[in-house]
Length: 225
Picture 1: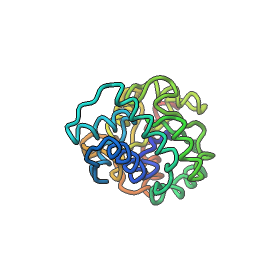
Picture 2 (picture 1 turned 60 degrees about the vertical axis):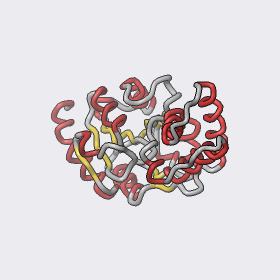
Picture 3 (picture 1 turned 90 degrees about the vertical axis):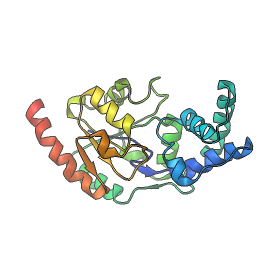
């Protein structure tokens, strides 16, 4: 089983997430953010992204204000979820190669489950995953290991035979807490360079994924089998 983060790992979603954030900020009369700045705000869910957008303009807001803005964000984002979002180069080929080797796949994201499924549906990718679980699926989000454990269980996998792939601290953190190997990608969204978070392996293109997984699989087989 290979479990993937979504935003910044499977799909380059930053353009559409940034557009939704800027829609909300503009409605509030606040300064919008550039795409590079927005990239560093992604990964901890909608509420945190909005909070970071407000912090960018030093604008205080009550929890009720943020909840209202979340509603506006989700409404806009739902209508524009795949305007510019695309799978990262080489993803489809990597999934095809891994599937031919007998691997199954799941998604474990802090994105709302409904939005994750909608995005993957619109990109024609949903059928590739045995489970698609979000930050609201089990009531916990990464790096809480329960979200990863339950994602693997829902996909019919074994945690002892699972590898995580992600782009940021929550992905490395959830893998470490669940006791599984993790591959970090350099092309995602993180303020801290992924190599500094010390995943087991680092890749800079999806074409490297099958070989990286194979390299991690050998010690796993020695432990589990």
